[in-house]
Length: 398
Length: 225
Ligand SMILES: Nc1ncnc2c1ncn2[C@@H]1O[C@H](COP(=O)(O)OP(=O)(O)OP(=O)(O)O)[C@@H](O)[C@H]1O
Ligand SMILES: [Mg+2]
Image 1 (tube, each protein chain N blue to C red):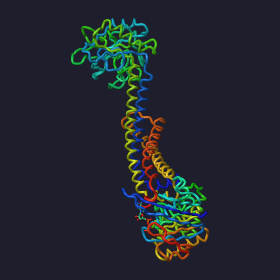
Image 2: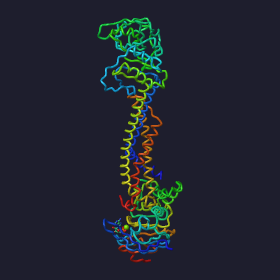
Image 3: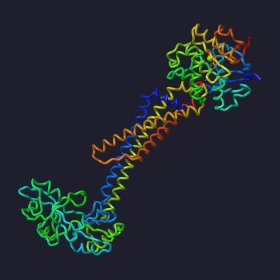
Image 4: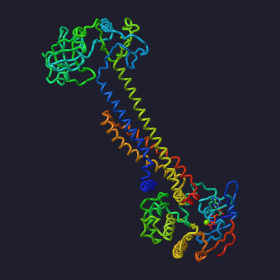
């Protein structure tokens, strides 16, 4: 029987290919979509994976995250303004290990006649030691520094014709207002491997930042909180939120554990992944309908032949098996082809769109199973039609 | 016990609302080793009778015993097995499969029977050689003449070594020379011990027959020896 199927394949290779095009495309899309989805997932996982899961960020305004620490964004509240009082409150919450208030602004950095726009980050040096900034040359800021600055590696090496080194003088202009301050560079940071965190910029003390900006009230634009126990970070975020709400009632702010954002992001990615696989499945189903139609055509064309088979002793069961096997083999062949093509496509998409992709065993098995099962199921109706043909009538055909 | 015992056989077809009787009470016995010619005017029901004998169709009424078994009581599966192993059918229009080789056509009944591959192709080759087509094994039937095709069909009919050959106008589409060739083969098969029942319109082809059965309007009119 199997030999006979193979034979029918050989005879009808072109039609087989045509009819299985839908299945091939379906499997290709399942593989490509799943693997790109998987890659995105893996990429995010990797990027966030070594990120500190013990960090909480506190920001004024309604956050864009989806964590439980968010307050409803629709409330027309004033953004909260955070200062040292809040740092103290947070520091007093049980389970908080460190608190790092930050303030960031854009300035024009002038060095030996060249100007470039950079970020300036105001920090509290005494609490900042264990943030992931490693000094390559010179030293980091200390509490007693005033007009001292530490610059990130990229600014020091890439932004100006000459490298900035410890001991150099730089000038920071507040944009549009013709105000500036001179700073002495005391250190250059290590090249940055983790751009999400120790970001590009010029680090100065909050005191120097305050004077540079010359605002009436100096407010932090984010406060980073490190939990003692990473496992408790979400509970701690709620605790921080509760304590802050005592003095920031009716103000908008956002307390978010990084892990929360990470998790909800993974969740969304997972959903995307399966939605993509769903699209692939739909094209498979469309492909199955195509296969069913083409097989019906084949059965119709081979009516006489089926009559002959029955006349010389093939049972209903034989004919049904024959055509189901035919469909199954077609499904297997087109799924394998689809997997190979899908692999190429996801490689291509991955490199062109510069997104990570990863063909997993899981997606191969998924594609293969779906392709074979759906094609075989698509073959049931035509196979039955063939099997139920009346031999005498079938012989009369042609 | 006769090889074939037909009594009170009726067959009617439903055409729309109407029951059209085709066989109207056939009585006939055929002994093993006979060479029976079935004759009669067109439309009298010869092919219908052959199809019932060949287990391709079922009686509407009456009894058909084949080696003592009542065909109307057998399952589709059993009928298929009889077609496969006990009967060799030869048709007027050959009914070969054009997209596979002659060899595979002859192998097909054995393939369905799940005979081992080597035994299958050896026997198919032998059979094709015995009908003088040893040099056409890999040809497609569509590249053969009518006489050659009918010889392939006979080889196929013999594949599972059946004891009965049913031939429905086997020479109906053939010229004189091919007819003579086919009838020679038929004669030899009969001499070899097979029972042959053959429908024919050509009295010339009946010279080797042991008996002639004349049908008319769905009934057996006359039997001559
Ligand atoms: N499936 C069917 N439905 C309705 N009528 C049928 C069917 N098969 C055969 N008949 C009718 O039965 C009658 C006998 O047909 P059958 O083919 O047995 O004749 P025949 O003796 O073989 O004729 P011929 O010598 O032309 O081959 C014909 O009138 C035919 O029209
Ligand atoms: Mg006829």
